[in-house]
Every structure is written in structure tokens, then in C-alpha cells.
Image (cartoon, rainbow, N blue to C red; front, side):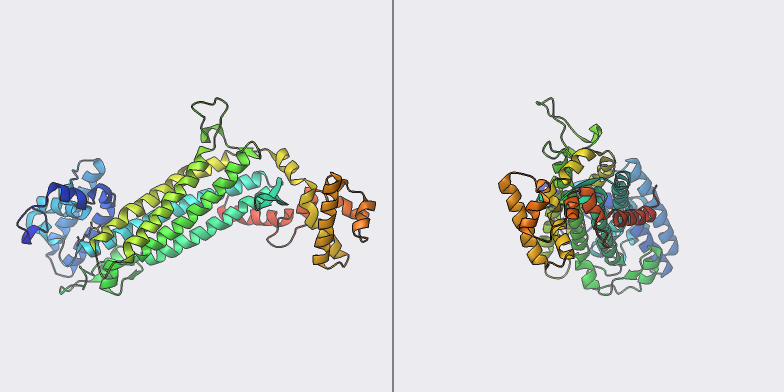
Length: 458
Ligand code: ARG
């Protein structure tokens, strides 16, 4: 008979147990469930709701159960539904009536709300540390290649020369915002819900403040109905993880393109690529591709969570049990990506000549020419038009822009001078962009130094 079986005359059918169980996936919450139960039992003892000696017997037994689960000496079964029932059943088996006191003034509704919050708090810290590692890897590669120039793209068309370090630091900025979003989600996760009972609180004189302090929460929930029904924090975390995954996917896409034969800007170390079962010559960027692909799973997890919550009347509904698999899947997926990504970045070998050659195509310096005309007093829109006409002229003549003679240039715009012929250099183009946030060598060096300093590397 289940722990909740008092009012039932028949046992659940096996298929029903299999359908309703969550132990197959919520067993990973065992540590947090035990930690929450210990704090709860200690509070019940301190508040005189159960005998002090029962409270300490419960805490001791919970420690033993924890060790047994960790050793693999614990049987999980669909019959006992979820992690809460497993641990409580074991406690009662060991302690009899004393164990039967642990669930006083508590419901699984506030218990699970507590467990997930405790669990997510820890996972966020793990993920945040791994994102830092990735940022460090990006900065390390950028430092190693701090003078390397490649074409910057818009519309996947050559736009202007940029520093490789500038490109990588763009991702460092994105990841920094991801960390901010995770920290923000953590604040709202870090609120103690226990004491809400099933929905309305309890008639027993519990001390929620005691539990809050014991479990190191800076705040506790203020409305018991909200506390058992709320999964905003899960939606919020999944949103933050989705945006992070989107950034990973974009970076992956850049790297996959760069490694293609058409770009040939770089390659990963062999350990981070795989071959083809048929084509002997192949070296494929599978880790980057899988990371891009797995982003789809994380989005799916977010949409699942939002959809689960959307039609739910207050307060707890069993639908909420479905929160766990998307959360766990997103966390596992993101942690999986982060377990390989930093080293994959560090393994990159750049083909710097190829990058510079691509960035040196004179068309990429057309903007610089227009800006030189601006310096001569030509309004920018007119300058843009004149340089556009020169680009068309060069195309018609079948020669690159830098091969147009000064005399030819003067025919299109009389303001042309010999210095304008010197603009067709990628190094010159980068060096000229010393605006805050621009790709100029000094600007980027300043940014690199800032991040190197923040991360304490080099
Ligand atoms: N396994 C359940 C969950 O994950 C625990 C809460 C069950 N509460 C209930 N009243 N059936 O949501």
C-alpha cells in the first residue's frame, strides 16, 4: 500500500504505477531531498512539534540513507512513485513511529518545490563556472592571435577587416550576459518554499525562518499558494539556458564555416573532430555541429516547460511533475556542451595567412575610401555614392579596386589624392578604427587586457 493509500481500497495497477512514477528521473534529487528533510526535521524538533530525540534519530537515519544511495545500496521501484516516497518509506522502515513523524506539517507539494530550488541553485553554480572556463579559452586563443586579421561578415558577405580577437571577444561579451541572466534567475530560485504545506500552510506552529537559515536561503516565499504552484523560476532558467545555447550555436556555425574548405580559416585539433566511415579524407567538426544541434533540444525543453504551465489553475497539479525532465535535459545538455567546448576552442589552429588574404580583398576597404572623402568635406551620402560608382567602374574594367589609377579615381571624384591609394590594406583598415568598442589594435588590446585581468590568466 502506498504511503498515501489510507483512503484507497485497491492498489494501483502496474501500468498506472509505471505511468505516474517519477522515480526513474527524480532520483537525482536524493541529496537535496535529504538535505531538506533534515532541516525540516530539525525545525520540528526545535519547535517542539515532534520530540527532539525523534528529530535527531530522523537526521541520523537520513544520513545513513544518503550514504546507501551513494554506494548504490538502495533499491528504486516504480511502486514507490518518487524520491520523496522512497526516502520516507525507508525512514519508517528503519525507525518505525519516529520515522513516521518526518512528514509532519509538510506536503510533497512544498517538498518538491524546495528540492528543485536546492538542486537548481547548485547546478547554476556548476554551469556558471563552466561558462567562465569557456570565456577563458576564448580569451586565451584571442591573446595568442592578437594581431590576426580576418574578414568580418554581414549577410555572410565580406564586410570589413576585423581582428580575430575582436570576433572572439564578441562571444565573451555574450557569455557575460548569459552569466548575468543565470545569476538573476538564481536570485529568484534562491527563495525557501517549505512551510507552504499542500496549499494553505499548516495549523502546526512551524518555524519557517529556522529552515530558511538552515538551508542558507536569503528569503522565503510569501504566499503558500504561489509557492506550490510556481514554476516561473524553471521557465526563467530554461530561457537563460536557451539564450546561452543560441550563443553556442552561433559560435559553432562560425567555426564550422571557418573550417570548411571554402573558408579554410582554421581547423580543430584531431581529438575534437571525427572522420567519415566511408570517405578517408574527411575531418569533420562534429563537436561544433552537435552543439548547434543540441541547442534545438534546449529550446524544446523551454517550450515544454512553458506549455506545461500555461493551462494550469492554481495551485499544484500533477502536470508539474513534468517539469523535471525538461529541466534535467537542458542542464545535462548544456553541461555536456561545456564539458568539451573550452578544450575544443583551445585546440584551434588558425590559418592566419589565409585569413589575412581574404581580409585584404580591396573591396573591403571601400568604406575607408568613402570616409577619406568625408575628411575632405564631402557629405557621407555623396561619398558613398561616388565610391559605389568607382566600384562599378573597376568591375566593368575587370580589375580590383586597388588597381584603379589615381587619374581614373579623379575622374569619378576630383577630391582623390595619392594617400587614398594607401587605404587598400587590411592592417591600415584595422589600425584606423580606434573608436571605443571598435576593432583597432589598441582598442582590442585594451579589451583583451581587461578580460585577461578579470579571469586572472596569462
Ligand atoms: N513527484 C511529484 C512531483 O514531482 C511530487 C509531488 C506530488 N504531489 C502530489 N500531490 N501528488 O511533482
